[in-house]
Length: 324
Image 1 (cartoon, rainbow, N blue to C red):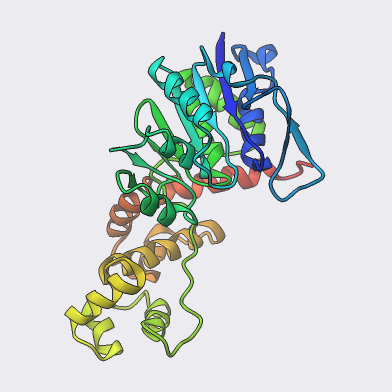
Image 2 (spheres, rainbow, N blue to C red):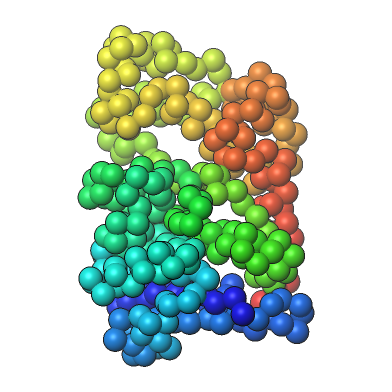
């Protein structure tokens, strides 16, 4: 029997834990899914654990840390960012050495980092925590953009809804695509979003228009369909192209060209979600000369094509109609 063990601690997030229970904890053998032994594990368990933000709800673990032994997949659920206790870290290292697939959801990456399991690897977490993870653990290559990062035996996911993508990815990889599609259909979600699809991060322009690059960013964001490039941004900001590059790096942590591409792809995503415009038309609206050019940049940034992206969102929307 396939065994999935989720490690929880006080301050756990209800959403991410709920995803693990929905994907691995429901008996679906009557519709052809293989049986799964689902274990909820905590240090000194079984015991009751407090949840984050919702003080009236508690979760009872079913196992202590010994429940991680023999599991096919060990999932560290989200809680407040914490590197865990020595007992938790040792249990994760043991599970890893015994061959379990180790998965972290959102801030669970901090516990894997504390255990040393992410050293020298690429890893993802919620974009809110990405800078902290990179700062606290400089040996980790933090990939902020990804929904999840599959590094083989270790899979690290971004926050909240990315837990669904990561858990379905594990089902698809370890149990089979048919089971993953069946679970996704029951959950009324798209059956597959690529791990390197961007987190849906809104990066607002700084509020004060007279500070830093704010005015130039606002100006450019309203003209994405025009021929906007680094020299145009530099002229608007009244600085040299070299100075502009330094300021972008200091204020935004990126380059002018990367920022322009990011904004164009973000605008294209929004149009794909809310309009029935053709790919060609959307490409022109966000500054690309052809549908082919949009497809190339979109696939490189999001990990899928504009058409597939639109179909995924349309499938979720249509499947949800009439659902209570």
